[in-house]
Length: 290
Image 1 (tube, rainbow, N blue to C red):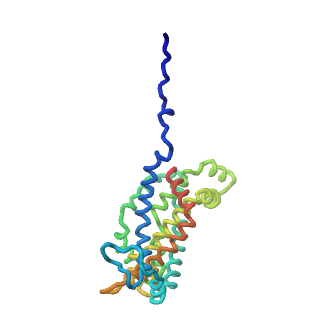
Image 2 (cartoon, helix red, strand yellow; image 1 turned 135 degrees about the vertical axis):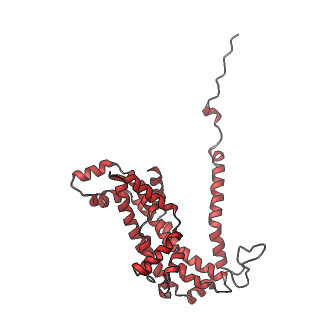
Image 3 (spheres, rainbow, N blue to C red; image 1 turned 90 degrees about the horizontal axis):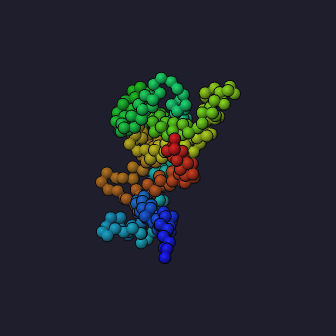
C-alpha cells in the first residue's frame, strides 16, 4: 500500500497571523511616543487655563483646572505689548527664512551638481561646523555686532547672524542630488546659465525640501531667546520670547501667566507647521533618499 507524502508547509502557509497583530507593537510604540511628545504642551495649556484657586504645584499634581478661565491670557495681553512683540518676531522670522533659504540653496547647488577642486573638503568643513555649539559663537558675534558692524540693539542683529545654516545646506544638497543631471544638461544646451538653471529648473523640483528648510529656520528664529536677549535693550524691539521674560519677577512669578504667554508664543508657529506639514514630510523623505 503506497502512501502519499504530505506537502511541506511553505512560508506563505506559516504566516497566517493577521496584519494588525504584526503591527500592534509598532502602533503601541508610536502611541507612547505621541503621548510623551504631546503631554508637555497639554500640561502647559492646562496650567494657562487654571484659575487662582487651582494649584500649580502639588502632590498629587492637578492636571485639569477646576475653574478653567481665559483671564491669564487677558492679563498677559494687558501687561505687555504682545502685538508689538509679535510683529517684531514675525519680521525677524520672515526675513531670516527668506535670506537663509536663498543663501543655503545657492550654496548647496554647486556642492551637489558642480565639479570643482575641493568640493568635498568644503562640504565636510561645513558639516564640521554643526559640532560647534552655537553658544560658543556668541562672544565673537557680540563683538562684531557692537564694534564692527554696529547693529547692536536693532532687529538686524537677529537676522544677519542667521543667514547661514550648515544644516540647511546639507539638507538642500541632498535634495539637489536627487535631480537627474539630464535636466541640467538640457537647460545648458538651451543656453541657460547657472543662475537660471538654479532658479527655473532645480528650485521648483526641490520645493518640498525648501519648505522643510524654511520650517526649521522659522522655528529656530521664532523660539530664539539667548541671542536676542543679548542684542536687544529697547523694549519696543523685543521679540516674543524676550518680551515674555518680563512675566518673571525677581522674587516671585505667576506661573499661570508664564504658561499663558508660552502658549501664545507656540500657537502661531504650530499653525504654520500644520499648513506646511505636507511639504515638511516630503522634503525630509527626499533628503533621506538623496
